[in-house]
Length: 333
Image 1 (spheres, rainbow, N blue to C red):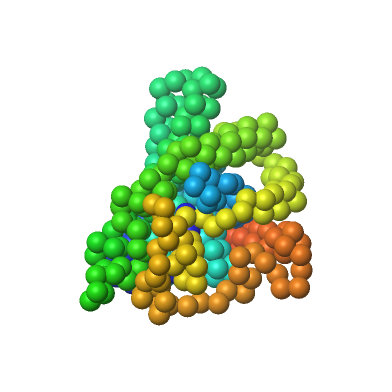
Image 2: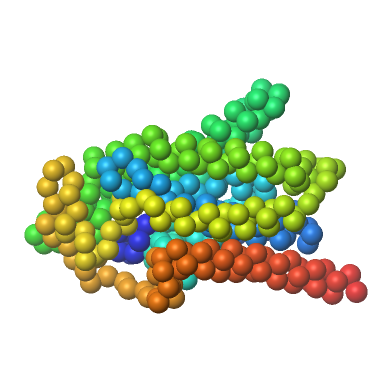
């Protein structure tokens, strides 16, 4: 679901990115006002959860791969506005450090996965939980919220892909960017998420919420005991298991490189050309592309990437929490 650069036109990226600016502004203001210094590191833990969950690729119908995101999970644990910030930072780290998702397309990816996904998921979760007042109702809300949240994000990504050949063509009538129209992009993105990826999202969300309710209920319920050590233990377990994501072969739909898209088969025939905007578009070389470390086996590189990503996210939010504390002290002094 990570849209690479040059699949969307620069103008599309600018419009969707601009739409995220007021969302980020509200989210930052909400976090400043509502998240205490003590809870700020939890945003880093949530970002690490999402980052690691996204490393678990699974095979999807059609020979492509996909992954869960954890957007509804973070909205349930932290609130949707805090989830938006955590997911945004996780997506930014993926793009800059690992080349997972484009730099120009960052705003679009954030719109889909850091805004639409957690808010749709959280709304459905709350709607059901508030009306079915039992533990079963809560888990039903968690399951349906996470399922429809990720599918809403997938649908939006499919629309962003599919409008490109309608709006942007060269003089010969060939698409400049993503070459697949809505009639191809929507079923290609939505059906695999409805059949597989949505249930993977449900599995991660329900399992982690159940774990947290057992070991640290204070994260979910006011006045209950809150422990962070089990959360770091869970992060360590996810890091150790992350190489399972290497078992899924193939490329996620819409994430082919410009050197391979001409050979991609759709509707029984290969595309046969590389769109001009993709061939001559923006290029950015990440530090650890595709979570692979040169000179190391794939498994070792994947684990090292998982460690680095989780550590950076946790440390970053701890630093932010520390800065927030210092500002509070300066004001009160």
